[in-house]
Amino acid sequence: MIFKNYNKCVFCNSKKLRQEKKQYIKKNFYLEAIMNDLNISENELKKFIVYRCLNCKIIQNNPWFSEIISRKIYSNIYGQHNRSWSNLINFIRKEKTPNHGILYDMLIKKIKIKKYAEFNSPFMGLMLNFFKSEYKNSNNFYKNIFENTLSYLSSRQVAGQNKNIQNKSTVKAKKFLLNCNKLKKKNSIKKRNKKYLFIDNSSLCWGQNDNYKSVNSKSFASELIDIDILDINRKNEKVNIDLFGIFHTIDHTFEPSKIFNFAIENSKYVMVYCHVDERLEKQHLFSITKEFLTYLKKIKVYSIDLTDKIKKNYTTPELYFLCSKKKNLINKFIK
Image 1 (tube, rainbow, N blue to C red):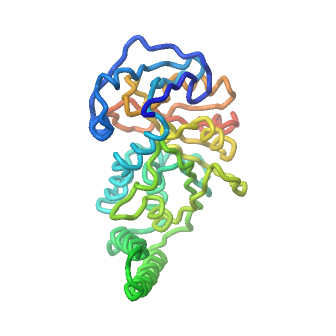
Image 2: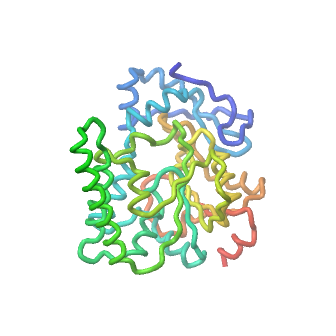
């Protein structure tokens, strides 16, 4: 089954969905790849109708792809998260962190952050900002730590090799790991923040094939930035997070409400960044809208829209908002 009906809101589960008056279809790189690999026509995609939830105000396509096809899209058709890897490579080559305006400086100025977390994609948010604050880039440290981390993880890939090559690879891996530890020790300038990446293994997100030179992004981030990776669906030890970032990934899970609630319940603050284009493109199941903030107020989650406050030049409609279940924390941030 290629297509599936989504007759309830994928965020709040409401049945109160209203068809949008205007419907759009615009081909792009992702959509053309999906059409080509799944042998789907443009007329079939026109059957994806955009609806608005009258409760939480998100918009969603109905019908859309089934979960089986969704996994194929995010594993095979474009399993590599190009933008995420580009962020990392751009940082290594030019010391440029992902473009979020002055958001990082604003947050660390107003929030005491000892424990920081993100959801599903490690190089889309502020992880590289924290890494940059923890290590100086003397003697090409960023380039050297990148290459040694990549070599360490690559040298552990020995499937199909004879025992002699496997033994040599073990020696190489030990050498590269030792190099990484020495480089970090030499270039460390402050105590590292505790960092976590929570994952949900959704078929709507980049996962097993989000690789660069055969190394997965989550494995790379774990070694490079010293991130603890935790499955959000498993019972983990209670982790009290100071700031939980959801950067461009709230619309890449089939259980967005569960992810959002987990972040809210386990964090002082939650920072969300997402597209808010009313012309929902067909490769997306759903999208948050700016009116979503009114829904948060209704369920007693307090928020502040930072979109116009972080001095970022936008080329597409986007939304940045900080929220918390504690009103006093948001009031404190506003002051």
